[in-house]
Image 1 (cartoon, rainbow, N blue to C red):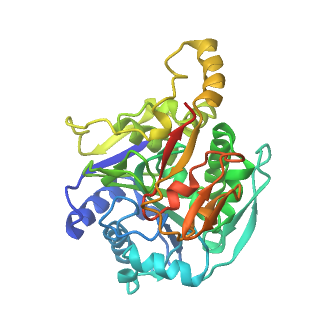
Image 2 (image 1 turned 180 degrees about the vertical axis):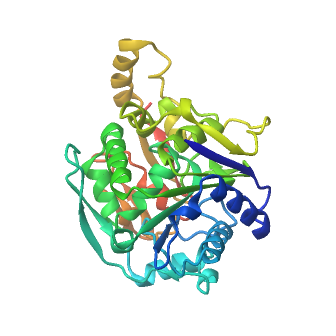
Image 3 (image 1 turned 30 degrees about the vertical axis):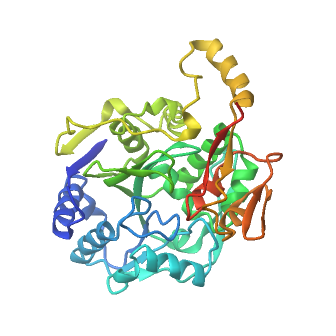
Length: 371
């Protein structure tokens, strides 16, 4: 498995383009290209947020990839994403604008087809099918361009997690409600990733996010751009760069068990791993998880007890809340109401998915432990 890694200190177009060219050469991506190929770029545009913040894929990275594609005679290029809110023209056009994607309109097509279709899964999957946005279904070639982040629910967000954005709009909270347990939710993410199966994954880690990601954390620049065909092993590798234990990330651990990740076969191309990397701050939801500290069955028993005693819940800072309703809109359990321009949370029924925290534009929602 070839994993490319290039040091890029700023979002300078020429520096990023040079790294992309070197990465794609090492991965021999040019051999995949052919006239008439329909390419879809899947970024991370989880919410309408300026690229100045490490929340979404930076448009300069996408521009560099598109530039490479055009130089290899690829003209049918679409950017397609389903953000955390509604999946319609009005909502997505605002996301495109705020995230800096509108400036790329001359370079590629911003998806304006907001339909979706059913894709059947492999035999043996727990999920028999997925409802996936149409551009992904119709693509000949999918380039997955994600943002490296910690994540309040999954612990880590990279190539696998980014493909959750192929599920249309508010169907994503329904998936959270269907699979509230982290093991089940991670299995769903892995089965979705195997169904979408992108041919190439680029990780934007020039500026990454630590803490309460995927939207409420803070900047932790790695000044790195990563690319690989095998995005499962790439996630294992990238989690290690963050100072995380990949085997403590449920979806990565499951991918290892399924034989999808082969860390011993990583062949690094490009620049060496920087020596001055510092560990990422973990989300508040993970700070009291002691299940990996205790050995064997004792750790599993403790984890079950701690799951109830130390369960995390969202907590609202009313002084920051503006009553926009994004939390209520994204809540799978429908336990949040907006009254007098403030959100009101019910603890009963909360599945601790933290979709509300993820979609809050004001960072008004934090994590509270039962104890």
